[in-house]
Each structure stands twice: as C-alpha cells, then as structure tokens.
View 1 (tube, rainbow, N blue to C red):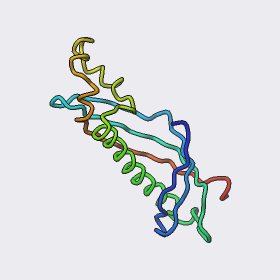
View 2: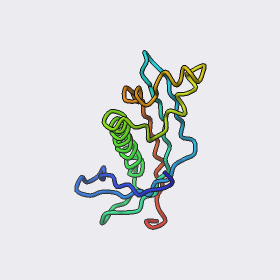
View 3: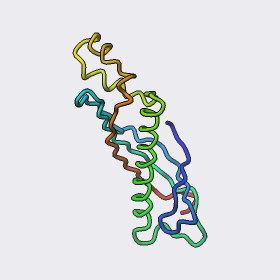
View 4: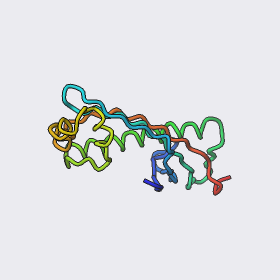
Length: 142
C-alpha cells in the first residue's frame, strides 16, 4: 500500500466517523516461524495518519483527544488487519500479502521448502499483529 483514506468510528461520538489519510512507515517488520508445522506470522505494522475530517465543534487538540484517536485507530486497524489476514489465509487460501518470502528462510534447502508446500500450509497460519498508527493533525484542521 502506498496511501489510502481510512474511516474509523469516532471515539467521542459513535454517530460520526473520522477520516484518516494513511501512509506506511518503512519500518514495518514481518517475521515467519514454523511452529508444529504451521506458520506463525508476526507483523509489526507502522502507519502515519493525518486527520482529514472533523465533526462540528470537534477539537482534537484538547487534552488527550489526539491520543484517544490514535489509540482507537490502533485497535481498529489491528482488528481490520487481523480479519483480512485470516480471511485471505483460511477462506481464500491465498498469500496475497507475500509472507512466503519471509517463511522461506526457515528451510535449509530449496527441496525442503518445496516439499513443505507453502501455499497449502499457509491456510493453517496463526497471526500476531501489532499496529502503531502515528496520528498527527492535518493542516486542514490547524
């Protein structure tokens, strides 16, 4: 992903949402271990976000409001990412996130890797997802 706009429910009023302009931070880390024959995938996702929308009379600069938005964005994006990863692995049996390139290092030879049959075993994956969304105010609100 290069960039996207993501709407999250407002942590202050469930009737409203907050639009965030998301860009990836290049320090995102992925690691794959094979545990009891199943892939155990660690992903530590780091994202930068700018607030694009505001509700009437909202003040994201007061108190801990920006921190509350950041905490909510972290949990919301983590949940969505976990749903995406489990759906693509279990339902679609497809490694569209390309975790196989991290898994290949667990095998000593190419033949071991080929006999493991990554695409078949990927559907047995478990995920450990960490998300850190760094939310900053947008120039549109300043």
